Length: 47
Image (tube, rainbow, N blue to C red; front, side, top):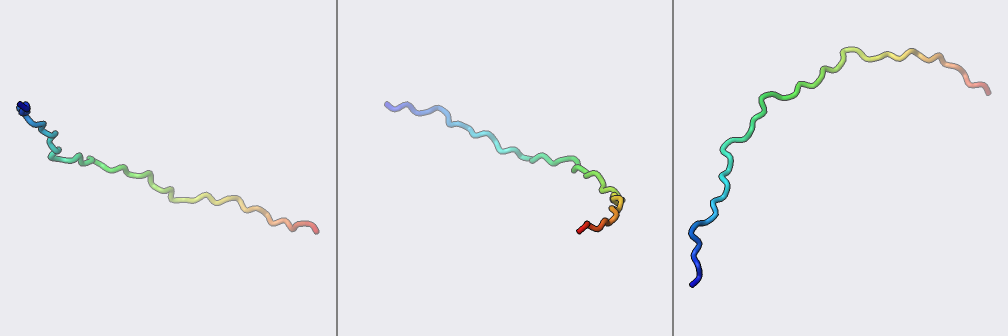
């Protein structure tokens, strides 16, 4: 006769909670000043 299994496989239970991060990353603040380059004197190109 065909053998009857004595037990069925019990699937792994689904987790009851997901992980909630405790804090989000605070990005580095943007500098309050921008770099002003030194003006380049305008030189006319020789013909």
